[in-house]
Image (cartoon, rainbow, N blue to C red; front, side, top):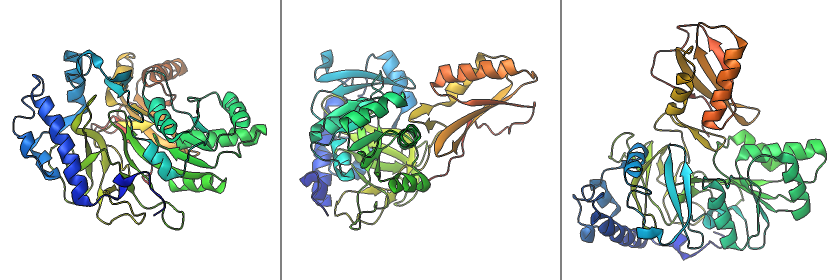
Length: 415
């Protein structure tokens, strides 16, 4: 392969397992002494843990459980050091789930994914993820700065101002959702602004259909994607094949021990079978042990053609629960419940997520006997206030929605 980011990417599998398990064992030993976590780790002896399979004795921790633990044991359920030593920033994500950021360089690990995408020291990077309260902007910002790249902290929206920044600073690299990259390029073409400096993009937070990748690359931008979450940062990332095209799947980040379990359980599935992604990361500031992400994928059995020796997953393949990530933001069934409760005219509601003109689109279908435009307008306003996303609202006659328990129907194509 081309020169990798560091030696860790080409470790032998046994060396990787030994080094990762040594770090996880230390983290588990510390947590097992804490009142809140003692019971969870009571079935394991940290000093005897040698193999990834040894983690199977620890129950998977799911986001709803973490939410409850954080609410009862603020701020981070005893995971972080007393006094928040080593913590640089404090964030929140929908749920709410609260996340810290450690103060060490590239604490989120995204420099590795950027390097694999072709971003190099000195490249100006325009970062279109939000920097307000949620960690998205900081996750990619830290990786870019670790590579030695100056960052334009653009955040989302405000196309005209971003186009002015692009013309002035001439960024070579873009990080953000693939949808917003298309929006920027389309707006630049429409307004006669020069966006030709952008040659490479690392995208995440939204689906990247093959058609959208082809369109963006046809406009001169090499597009690679990564999978990152607010709890640990980078989880996996795309790499290049010898001919410069993206290899199938994603290589798991070197900081992460990744398992695939049957949704709703702590049991691993057979190699190659689709299941829920579970991640572990040893870290002094915020250790994560067997956290269920709610995302679906499958392990790939073949080694990567790029020469990296770490495990690979097939990429993001949907949600194990009914949550949906829309334009980089999670929408939860509880969000739709909040919308319904603010409008007693609604009998039943279903959010349908689709793709429209290579962008995520939401439509809230509501059952109601009331036939008035003002209700649809009011519900649309509530939907935006609750989810921070715009969506259409359409009326369905009573009995028109399926009684199958589904609140969010994600009808976007996978892959």
